[in-house]
Length: 410
Image 1 (cartoon, rainbow, N blue to C red):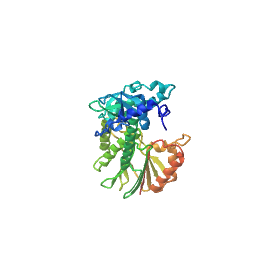
Image 2: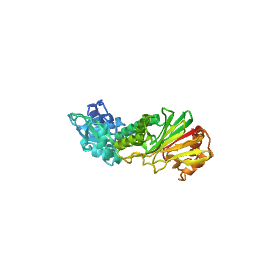
Image 3: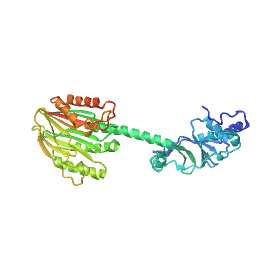
Image 4: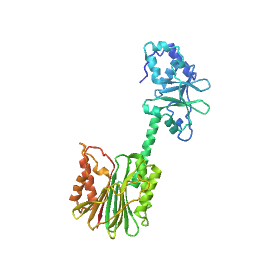
């Protein structure tokens, strides 16, 4: 659709003929794309058009009509240095007003141009984003003129161009973070030991999250089992799950649970400066004897079903979460699993999930489900829990990351 104001002019008027003559004489042009390497602001130039400052307003309107996708034009002097900027909407708003065509028929471009803010085209995009943070928050489109190292005009970009670029970068980063996190915290996992059968499940509330679980075979017939929950959600929380993955990957039978927890706590405090904490339960299980060393780090979500009876292991008073106390001296407890026992470790996303009326799933509902499902193999119990959560949630959004590990000891 043609712009108002100019397209309604009689194409045979002297002013339009003069405008066409100006264009043919090169008063309007296009600078070559800037191919500077790296993530520099030149990449975001959405307009490279310019017009000489001695050109008429009608010549500018004619050029803009021939380039409907151009929303801003730089005004340059005879040294190709910018002296102003004209926005498409403002140009045609002025021409479309009553008597606007008569008012501007003998005017030159400087009558309508604004003084631009100049930015070097080799400036880092992220540096520009930092400097324009306040303008970006306003949500309105603001235009800036780019210049090269000699001050010559090289294009125009807007805050909208910058926001789109940053949004695309964020989307790619989140997609990559999700793939990396899924390599560490798998959505579904199964493990068969000599006397154990284990299933793990994790569903993040967002693309990435802060839940973590691990099941690892150690030497000497031992297993390492852990479920952790990082405070917060999103990329920052997922970064800590990557830290957890690296630490637990290095856990060996020669470690003691206490020394491992001390080192991990120290690293989280030194790295994240008390901004985040991690609750969790860490278990080292001797498959041969059923003896389990349990370290509860402010988590307490560990339920054991034995002979139709349900009991909780771990205590929220045992230890503070990781990342809270620089001088953590972790306490551990010992329990012995009997053949036929089922163990469920989970994060608070399970019991805190709400339905469409805002009611919580609750630990009591989970207890009832586990009591009614005693003796089921882990895979069936995992499926039953997942199905019950989905049925309870209905149309309500997933409130938090949901992670659990189901183990049966034979």
